[in-house]
Image 1: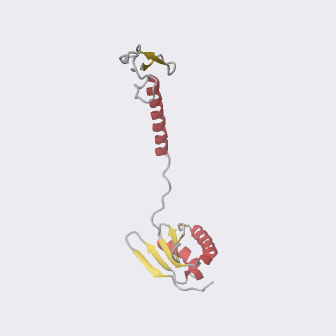
Image 2 (image 1 turned 180 degrees about the vertical axis):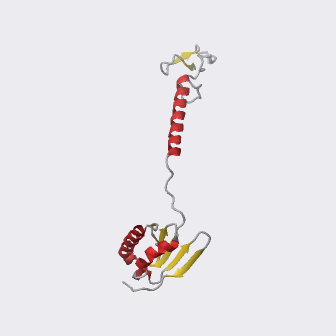
Image 3 (image 1 turned 120 degrees about the horizontal axis):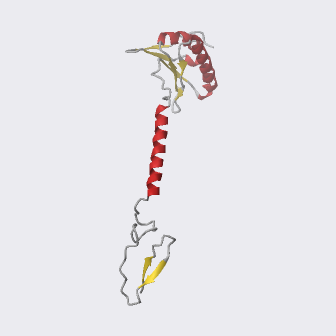
Length: 178
């Protein structure tokens, strides 16, 4: 049976028969700088100048993109909340919770005391948490307290003021219920 060898002319996958039918395979011969398997993607090849240039270009592009990302301003990261309010809620209270959030955000912004963070509502229970951020927990509570106290949602709420080295937790004082 004749052996098949790649012709190695770089124009395609031409194969030619060698051997005269004697059953003995002809020896493989070097067919250029890339070896006998030039053009066959199943064997590793020597990198060409074009491949090296393309890799260099891609490396430079990735380096430029990563440098641009490093120069971008960091994402705003809020510190620990100055005040955490834990309260009880029921699923039907969601509309009232959103209205309370709007009132709190507005009052805190007007007082320039900080900002209202996201509200956490546990799906597996009836615990809700309001997170208020600002440099001074007392000033923040002075702005938020008059909104929280009269809310029926805050009937059994617990407030935690977080100071630099300590924290103070207390039940929200009962006020006039809305």
